[in-house]
Image (cartoon, rainbow, N blue to C red):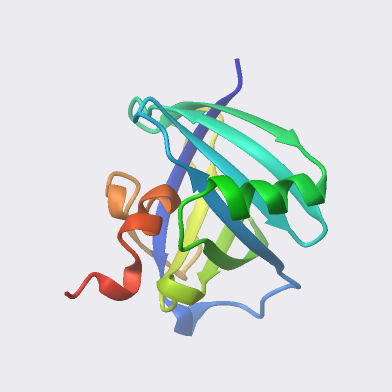
Amino acid sequence: MAKEIERKFLVDIFKLPTLPKGKVIKQGYIPTAGTATVRARISDDQAFLTLKGKATGLTRSEFEYPVPLEDAQNILNELCSHPFIEKTRYLIPYGDHIWELDIFEGENEGLIVAEIELENEDEIFEKPAWVTQEVSDDTRYRNSNLITHPFKKWDQ
């Protein structure tokens, strides 16, 4: 079974290096009964359907499948909750890992999050100077929650 072990952090934008070319991502979530997360994602000219199980600590099941671009667009438009998650993702090598830096747009504009995927929950890794507070356990930062509680509305 595929497993995802991921940690999330906030970012100090003033310490970021020059960013490589990013990928524009549009993704939506199909409502479920809370037992899983089902996501459709379009990233540039590729599309994926992803199913994620409930998290236990930092670990959860993850299954991702490529789908035709037109199918993904139809899934987003017909089956997914709105607003969509819109972001640009930058892959930044640091130490032995690749950090994913997401700069959000739309209803989540102003939010910048860095993620690192690990082999196990106790894995030691180097943090770049631009990584600040860890938010792995704060469910507000999960993309699936940003649909119903967008970053722009957190102060309200």
